View 1 (cartoon, rainbow, N blue to C red):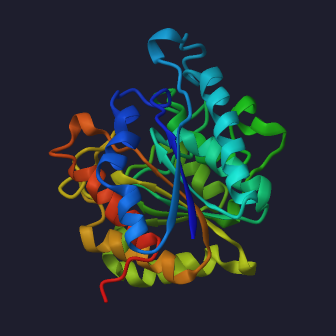
View 2 (view 1 turned 120 degrees about the horizontal axis):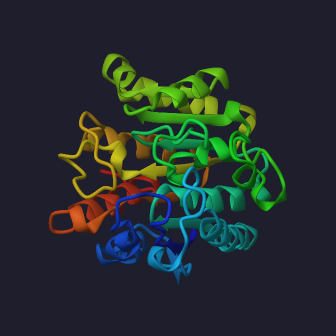
View 3 (view 1 turned 45 degrees about the horizontal axis):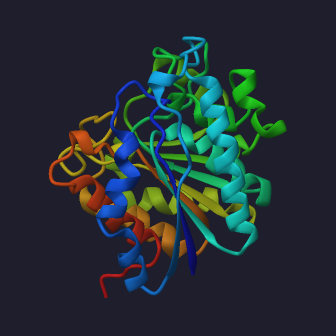
Length: 297
């Protein structure tokens, strides 16, 4: 496989600084070399240019830094579309999860039937009306489904980017009240940590991938490292106790790989300022390798 690595060191979509260093930390952990070791060809095209928060007006406090986020999303979307049209696999390194507006829009331009597997402690399904923070990283999945603030929803000139019935959230354990109502109203498939505890990650992933692969749909995997428990991934933007274990996270990646349906992936929210000896970035590399074919035997 030809993998095109695209850095998107965005930190405009969240309050806590540091995730802008995440792409560099993941690269420093040996991403390209480790992907080559399992047989892939890797082209790293560097980073999308992200404006500094200090140089940008916050704007509407219900949708902070909207204009620069849209500007970055336009560039990232074009890069992802170009990679897919060239027959490559785009691997996007964040940054906060607002990068998904660009990455998934870029995928959806080529694959209009794409399913999205959203592995995250959070639903990121708020709108400007339900958000408790005004941070766009918590609204991006709703916007991609055509729900929320018009400039986000209509980014790129069309909406929705993804069919709500093809969104599958895995590992959720921190959902805002308004967000919970939106997820129920729009019948989003959500596998919470409680369900994973009760049923086991193997059965949950079987069901999640059956939904994602319905009608032979391709899959975009969006991995937020805060899906894992902070004991495993301490260096994340918004750590929440009670997440996926090390082996559960690897099994999620292995199931996705075995489905042979994944066409693109983004990895977000690694925050080296909160990490210990680059542990979380190294774990991100391990999980990427599992998703892209690394086997124990």
